[in-house]
Amino acid sequence: MFAKRRSESGVFRGSVMDWSKAADFMPENLYAAVSFDAVNRVFRDGRTFDSKIYDDTIGLFIGPTILAMEGKAHRDHRNLVSAAFKTRSLARWEPEIVRPVVDALVDEFVSAGEADLVRDFTVEFPTRVISKLLGLPSEDLPWFRERAVELISYHVKFKRAFEASAALRDYFMTQIDLRRSTPTDDVIGDLVTAEIDGEKLGDEAIYSFLRLLLPAGLETTYRSSGNLLYLLLTHPEQLDAVARDRELIAPAIEEGLRYETPLTTVQRSATEATELGGVAIPRGAVIDVCIGSANRDEARWGNAETFDVFRKRVPHISFAAGEHTCMGLHLARMETRVALECLLDRLSDIRLVTDGDPHIHGQPFRSPTALPVTFSAR
Image (cartoon, rainbow, N blue to C red; front, side, top):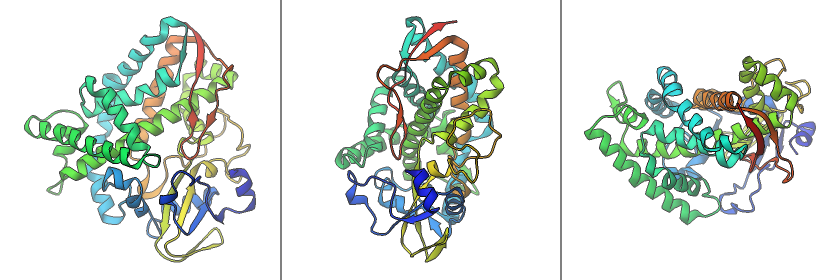
């Protein structure tokens, strides 16, 4: 669909989204940007194309966050919450949290010689990592995961999503209060004490940001890692090359993000009448920003419809661009690298079981729902 649309125009009147299950959220005036240049321009021109539309969609369930903020408000809040994602924190998180979590997961299935890498691995490790980064008790993990799924599925069941949002608010407020009385060395503790020019985050800003971490930190990482594993398993010669030469892991991650973008489409709204890709865009129009299409743009990548970990690196746009570039991109890359390293270190002769036709599907969220494999333990 994206390829057909790109062949016609970089921008068109209409939508790439299926609104049948979310008709109440459907804007009246819709356009879609599908070329790399158009998508890149929308992301980088935050004055003309803002993200306040999220106040009327997921913002209803997670509260006010940097996702929908623009200008000074966005910069101020981003600076405050970014204090919890410092470079030195990432360096510490890998050996202390991420690698032990991933290794423990592999321990749970390595002796069986078979596993579903979605159910047993890709869904699990980002959830466990985020919960440890936040400093949440391990016994709360099942409850935490259920509320996260309910919140993310707001377009399916509104009432359940509101209930999950309220439950998470109360839960996080308890965690915030605990850290105010007894400071902790975790992300919630960092958010409680973060201060720039004498300003601290209020309670609502903290628990809203923590609720934002659920779709941002769990959903996309589990999908992108599942996509990468599927692509390598269905290109065994490339999987073998990555297993032999670990320097290929980083380019494999980037190619996976480009070729099968976990979140194919986000939205922006036009703050004024403008032109995009030669198409007149009226003030107030909503634009589907098609990242998945931009990442397959033939004008930017040769053989764009081919998965190739050896291709010359040309930056993709999976983490967006401009002011709203994904804050967790370094964490997501590190998590995926560690996950792949651990699998390759501990499993050999990994083969995809194709009887059930596992494949990548979905729009706007995209990933396989199952990855049954057989393997030998090293």
